[in-house]
Length: 588
Image 1: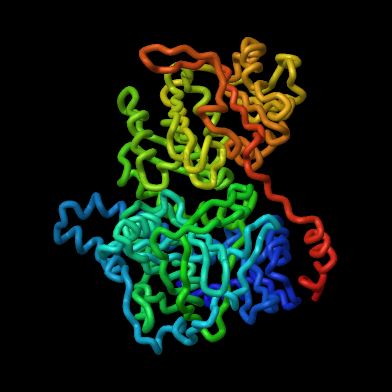
Image 2: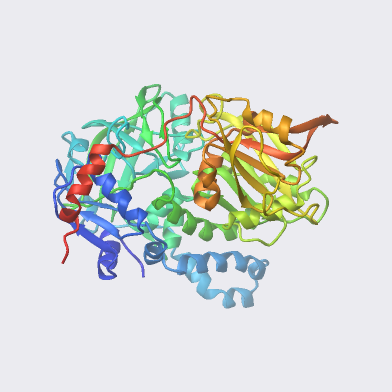
C-alpha cells in the first residue's frame, strides 16, 4: 500500500488497531515524552494526542515504534524493487533488445521515479500561511528535563547547493528559541552542513525549508544512510513507487512537498552561531551545549487541519532502532555495488549507529579484508565509525554474539587489531578528548580459527574485581571499582591477571557486569563508553611500526569524568504520569 501522506498512514494504523487517540490534556513539556517512552518500552501503539496544551495542533508519536508498523508504512515492495535494480545490472549491461524487453516492468518502474510539479490547488501544504511568530504556535516537545528548551525532533531539512544542482534532505534537530528562530544542528558529516559551508564561504545566507510529515517515505529518506550523491527525494520516490508531488512556494525559493503537514521556510545566515543544547539524544545521554548555526524562519505553510509529527529519543531501543533496521535492509544490497568486497554491512542502533559497525567481506587473497576496511571507513557517514569489525564468515550480523564469536575465534591480535588515534568522532560521542575528535579501532577475524573459545569462567577470583560474567564465547565482562575511584584498574587487570585471563581474547571492564545478560544493554554500555586509543589495554610490542597485542584485550567501558549524564526521567513527571495513566488510556 502506498501512503501519499501522513494521514493516510495514520488511517491504516487506526484500522489495524495500531494507534490510540489520547484526548486528555497533555503538556508537551516532559509529560508527553514520558507517556511515549512507557508505550514504546512495551512495544505499544502509535499515539495521537488531540489535546496538547498551548497549541491547536494534535501531535502524533511512535509512528514507527515496532517492526509491524514499519512494515505497514513501507511494505515489501521497496526492498524487492531495490534488489531487482541491482540484479538488473548483470542482465542490462550491455543493453540488448531482449534484455530490455525482459526487464520492461523494472524500467517502467524506474520511469516513475522522481518528482512532479502540481498546482497550488493540489497541494494541501499551501492551505495556510503563518508569518506571525509561527514557531510559537507549534506543539514542540521538551523530552528531558535538562534539555535546553523545546526541540523539533522529526524535521526534514531541505537544502540545495549554492551553486545549484545537488539537494539534501536530512534530519537535524532544531531547538526553538522563539517564534521566528531555531537552532540548526548540522553535524560534521551532514549534507546540509556541507551546503551551508559553501554558502558561508561566499558570505551568503542559505535558504532552508523544513518539512514536517508527508509520506512516510519522505521521513525514511531523510534519515537513510544513503550514498552521498543519491538524492533523497529520488529515494523517497523509489520507496513510494511513484513520483513525489511538489509545488512552488509563492513566498520562497524551494519547491514544497505538496502532501507535507508543515513547511517551515527561512534562511540560515553566514557566520552566526548560538548556543544549542543540552539535548537528551539517541546515544542515551545528554549532548552538551555547543554553538551551532541559526535558522531564521520567515513563514510557515501548513494544512488547515495539520498534525504535528514528533519522536522521542533516548536509551535504545527507541523508534530509530526500527527505522534503522528497515533502512539497512533496504540499502544493504547496494553496498557491494558501491564497495566491492563488501557482502553485507550492519551498523548497530543499540550504540547510536556510528559507534559500531560490522561487515562480512571477501577475503580472496591475504589481507584483502584490510583494504576493504579502509574503503568502508571512507564511505559517507561510515567515516565516523568508531569500532569496525570484519569477518569473511557467513554470520547473522544482527546477532552480535554470533558475530563476535566468529571474529574472536579467528583474530590474531598480533596482526588483526588496528587502533588509529587523532581521527574524527560523531558529534554526539563524547568519549574522545574534544568535540568531533577521537579515535577508531578495526578488528579483523577472517580465515580459519586460531583458537577455541572458552564459554565458562573457571579462573577463580581476580584481584580488585567484584563480579565476572560471560557475554559470549571468548568475551568476559568484569566489574570493580568506578573509574573515579580507580582510574588505573583496567591497566592493573592486564598487569596482574593477564596470565589467568589468557584464554579470553576480550575482557570488558564495566560498572555493572549484568550488562552481559543481553545484546542491547551490552552494546549500549560498552560502545558508548570507551575511546579506542585511550581505553584499550593489553600487553603489546612494536614490530616494523605495527603494534601487536597479546590476549586478553581489556576494554575499559566504565563511565568516566567528563562524559555527559545518562538519561533518566524527572521523578515528579514519573509520578504525574503514574497518577494520570487511566486518564490517558481509560478502559473501554
